Picture 1 (cartoon, rainbow, N blue to C red):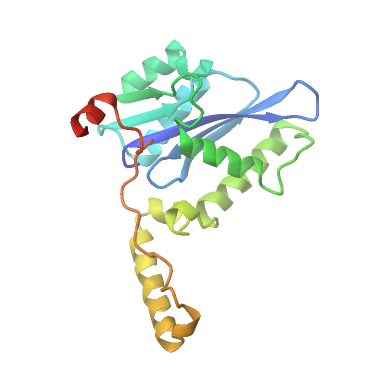
Picture 2: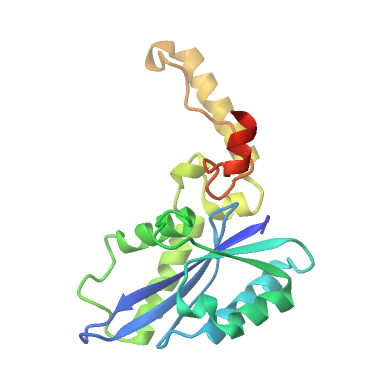
Length: 214
């Protein structure tokens, strides 16, 4: 993980009206890879905190600056989660009230998940079924899905720092094909330049910075 994580708590409806299963999902902002996920029968800050620690252990990102972006849900603001983030040296970043795009990467992931054709619109039959569905989704998303915001490289490949080589090779192939048949690409080939670093809400400029530019 480069510098930031986004966390989503997704309500997965069951076939029983009013009953939900809760999907805790952590996404690496840099690569868009899902680096941690679990499904439980309750909404709980302690579960989120434990998963956060396991993520950092798995990714070996202790002792480096890390920010966790989240909404203002109860699990994210509870004392257990705050204490765990402080223990791990992670800076908490909460979305501003009534600002839906403060955590756009997690929101985009949420939309991708809910709009999958396989999403059971009538609800999940059990906790086991929910976990199995999520596991299949994560495998597809991380390793098969060609992400449009990553120049159609999978999140798993970018997380493994392989996107530069993939895009370079793709550019070489496309340029050779265009030389053979230039009429097919009158406007040039697709942009294959790596996207580089990413930021959360890069278009937002603080008032102080705006005053300096004016």
